[in-house]
Every structure is written in C-alpha cells, then in structure tokens.
Image (tube, rainbow, N blue to C red):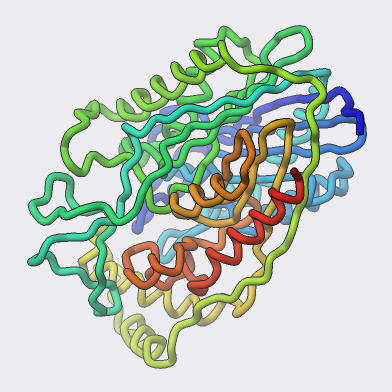
Length: 457
C-alpha cells in the first residue's frame, strides 16, 4: 500500500504552578518556595490524512487515570480525537506540583483542576501547527549515568520492609556503604530519539527516551523539570532551532534505575542541578552528533493500536489490615518527620497506605497500553513504573530497527516489577497505593504489548 505524506506539529504550554504549591516527590510534603525553571505540557502530533495521533509528555511526577481520562474526554469533545489516538505521560520529575498525593502528601487541588485544560491546549496547538514533515530515528548507548538502585547487601546489613518482614534486596543504599555487594538487575543504557523536521528543513521536535528515574539534584521546596526540562532547553540551544521547536525527553523503563553514584566513582557536580545539566549536556551532545548519520522519510508507515488490559490488584490480608488500622488509630501524625526507609515514620506511613489500599483499590483494573509505528521505529506505552529488564525484553522481542517504551503513560498503576523481583522484595514491591499489582502483571503487560508491536510490523 502506498504511503502518504506525513504532517507533524508540536507545541508546549507552560504549566508552572505558583509558589506555595504542594510538591509530591517525597514521603513528606514540600511546598514551592522557588521556581528554578518552567514546567511544560509538550505535545507532538502526527497526521497522514487518514490517521492522527498525539504524544503528550507532562512535567510531573504522577498523572493518574482519572485526570488523564478527564483530559481525553475534553479532547474528544472539542477536537474529535478518541482516547486511543492520544498518549499522555508524565516525566516523573519529583520536583513538580502535586497532581496526585501519596500517603501524608496531599493533592494540590487547584493545580490538579487546572491541569486538563493546560494539556488540552497543548494538543490543540500541536494540531494547529501540523505541516508537511519528515522523520528520522536514532539511538546510542550512554551507560555512565544508569545505576540499578536495587542492591544485594553483604551480611550484617538488616533488610526489613515496613511490615517487619525480612527481604533480600535494599533500594538506594547509602553511596559508598561498606555493605554494598552487587546490583540486582541490568540497566538499559540506550538513548533513543525521534527527530521531526518540516519539509523546509526547519526543526519541529525531537522526542527522546532514556531509562533513568530522574537526576534528583533539585533543592527542597523548588519547582523544576529536572534533567527532562534541561534536555529540551539544551536541544533548542544547540540546534539553533527557534522558539517553535519542542524538545521532549520521556521517561523510559526506569522503575529500578536512577543516576546515583553508589560506588563513588562518577564525581558528579555538587551544586544544585549540576548533575541535571551534566546529564542533559552529554545526552544532547550525542543526539546532535547522531543527527548527522540518520535518514529522513516523509512518507513513513504510520499505524497505532490501543488496548485496555485486565489486571488484578494485590490487596492486604485481614491480619495486615487490622494491624495497620490499629497503628493508624494510635498514630501521632506530627511525629512523621523522617524519610529514612528503616524509620518508624515509614512504617507508620505504610500503615496509612495499607488502610487506603483496602478502602479504595479495586480488585481488578484495566491497564491502557499502546503501540505506535512511525516508519522504521515503534514506540510502546505502559501505565506504570516498569523495570529496565522488562524494557530490554521488549526491545529484543520487538525486532524493529528502533524501539522504546514510554512509561507512566495514560495512567499510573504503580510499580510493576517482574515476578522474580517481587519475590526478592524491596521498596518497589511494598504494598501501597503506588505498588499494588499482582506478580503476574509484568508478564501480562509485556506479552500484550509485544503482540501489539508485532502486529504493527
């Protein structure tokens, strides 16, 4: 079948909250006292005359299914795009306004209520900016910033979850600790990107993907897009692309991966946001360098698919629920003053979480997954924090020239570790509103998405 000319358009809308907004990137609430850099909802739209699809990447830690579905309903009503034609994901930067609370960190309701209109406007403008375009794919490895944050520890280090149960691994041990043994899992070192230009050779957008959690060097009580925002800024500067260009860094399969220098070997900058700028500088330098060898097409194969996959939630046992209720009933909330994972405060916070899971979490959920093919590359989306080993398996099974997974897309059903990782325990497996899927969920998601990717071939 003959392919038709692709059109593309991009836009970004400022979603920076005011000072005083709740920040939800930690176990305890923080409040915005400084704005380091602006936050955006960034949209990239494609149209070949027969089909339309819009990617949206939002500078936020978590966008839940309710707010995304409300946004998609607005888009369908006013712009005519169905939910299957839109992907809305979060970067997972931990220094943004609280659209969704966690435990004792509240939702900032005014900010949440304002978000759908902002995302809608980004989609609307991206569609208005559609023009004849050409696309190209690229990728390279950048392993130096990827660290598995789940570790086996040497004898003598106590490993216990908030429920008093012994475990086998520890998340984010102290860098340089004498008890460090070895990381549990591999990381995915690949940076992938989709480059989009007009037929006049003017820049429209670059959408990249890297499997690191975030840079985590933003000062407390400060609003920032973390390294995700810095990538967009530096791409624009290095390309001389102009104000219409939209540089996007999406969140990859980074549920168990961050940038921490556990072995004290990387000599990261110590100043605030120094690491964010360092990582973004190397990522963008390599993207710009790789642009010299990529091949563009203006008539790519363009197709996509969508599926709501039924999954089952883990719910607390009656014994754990009763213990948690008792703890919460006697809790002095003013005493919750620590984010140390081994502290009594964390145990108390997870008691609150257990009560919340029992009260509000449905036994069955529908997990939205998507696959989008553009020429020789494919993008998969998953509504969760996914481990790097899952992403690596998807890349291997996809058998396409270019593939990456955008996580935290279209919903946030929490951490979804592989079944073997669930057996090991660790922070990502602790039952709470941010980790509540059954152990078979990873395999179901991975196999379903693989099938969709293969069908698009």
